[in-house]
Length: 111
Image (cartoon, rainbow, N blue to C red; front, side, top):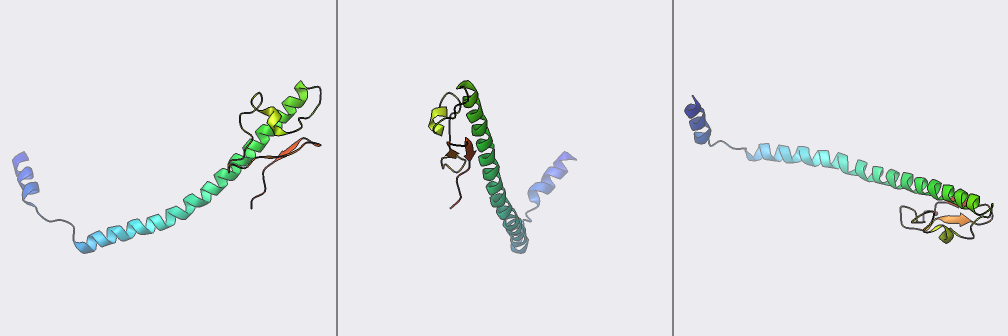
């Protein structure tokens, strides 16, 4: 029985035809055309959410600095490094915007 199956597999020389291969390639290309734009859209959303999370984190560390320094706000965000935060840049690499009079941290404007 096993020899018969093995002989059938070895003697069968039929492969894919050119039309079958073209259909498979067409289906794969259509799937890629659908998937790639969705991946780029989600990358922008992830970057925005990452920047928002960084702003909230730094804002919280400004409040911690204020608590530890008798209510005084830092003059700039560089005073928070490295004791409170390790980085004061947004996910796109731009530095965060800080208002020293109000103590508010915001994301840099997109250009």
